[in-house]
Picture 1: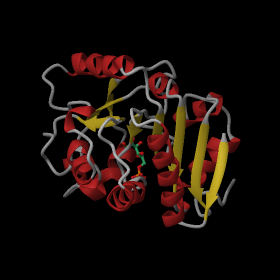
Picture 2: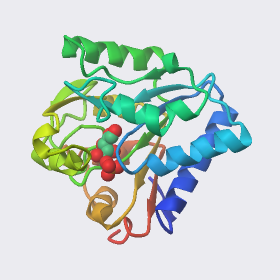
Picture 3: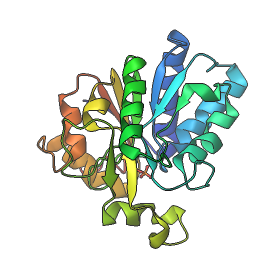
Picture 4: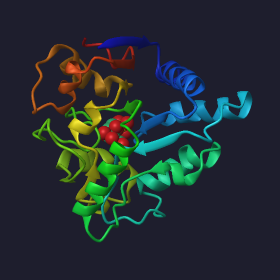
Length: 241
Ligand code: F6R
């Protein structure tokens, strides 16, 4: 794993955005894997700025998102679909039909998982996958104990993840109990992975990722066996490495 140390959140976002913009310019038909959460918001802001200022185009780009809550309508402000539209898609020139996010309202969630998995496969896999990391090492919504062989699947969210995400909801009871997530095996098939981390609250997770063993108790640890992973983190997140 390459580790790039940024001074702060803004520099981390800038570095990751530059990498993505360069890839999009080299391969205008790239498939980007995207994440939600607080961490990538700065990257998305910089992609938008660059699109407006320098005209980088996303007309032929395809995106797939890591995950979506189940039981929340796509137009609900708490859905990841809504998040992606607000934070990125509505501000660049990507056609909506080239953006894929699991449908958390699908009647048959298992069928939706297979459908989403085959979307990723038909695209030939993800070229560059952006990841955040949970305090417990989750990637996507793959919580500790998830099989490294997992494909897109339905998960029951742990109490710690629901607590961490409660900041976006009126109360913890409103945080959905289930979600659909790309599996760990699916994520590992991405040709390149950029994992972002910022702030002291991520320091233990990053130290365990860098120095710890590969173990299903810490889902992100499998990234150590991927041949093209770059961690871009600020110095607070890297302070225990
Ligand atoms: C979101 C996702 C999650 C987050 C993780 C960190 O699509 O896949 O794994 O990346 O929970 O979230 P933040 O960035 O809010 O700390």
